Image (cartoon, rainbow, N blue to C red; front, side):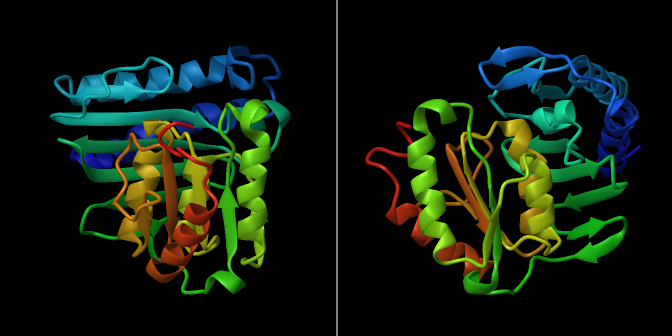
Length: 264
């Protein structure tokens, strides 16, 4: 089994568990005040890691619940077993499973599956992005006609007013803003042109690892506030088509509080 096939198979393992359990789980533990984790997060992750361990026993893994080294030297699988746990708990059908492969920090493969719509977003470096086997690309809409997505980090109870200020500034320039609650799926939708841009602070490597590959292979850009190509450990991500992303980045950067995003 080649790496791409393995990534898809691993994500499908997790997606099957998430899809089967949707609407049935209403209890969770909390890693933070607003950061829940359910038994399904753990079950999905265990299934994914089991397959990866069987097929690639020498590869490293960084997974949201189990953890792992953030030193991405060598081959590293990055796993989000359930992105959108709050949505999952509330029965909101906007969740995803994400698996990616990096080598020495370079992205090779990204897979994001929406288990409730049976949509599989797949990309590998230099080979484009597909949705259920059909090649997709980012939109070409300008910011004024664009729908932009965002999310709010787990410090939002402390920093909510500052995040709201940035939202208000972007809203003055865009057609609309959406907050769906699954970063990996938001960015998959940027990759296929449903959404036109995206920004968010404080994402984990598991949130962004696969989705960043999707956007770039679909012709988009993902950078920090300075325009540097993003890695999986950055404090702020801004994504979209090249033209829109540049404009969105300038707007977000213009209203960043002093010292942000590095000292957020």
